[in-house]
Image (cartoon, rainbow, N blue to C red; front, side, top):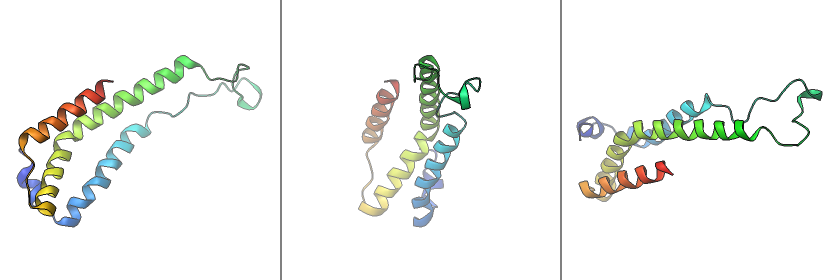
Amino acid sequence: MRLKPEIQKLSDDQLRAKTAEFRARIQERLSSIPDEPEVDAGGPSGALPESGFADLDRLKEIEDRRSAALKEVLDELLEEAFAVCREAGRRVLNMRHFDVQLIGGMVLHEARSRK
């Protein structure tokens, strides 16, 4: 793993802070995608259409964009996250994850992200 020397140099606090860093990177990527479709301001006080539901196609588009962005950022974080996991296991349990365990985790991630 090419990140191994870099991750090994981190202090325990720096290694622990990686979780917050990963969460922030994910949140940053997702924050550019709206949670809800824009409301048509033409109606009274910007109310939803009379059906009471937002445009379902737009909701589906937002959901698809969020899923694609999440998959993209998780794929970008994968190698570093697994390096952090391996190093944490080595420090806390004094045991190193086998390569096949990490590969299995990557396969599970890939299968989950395709759903």
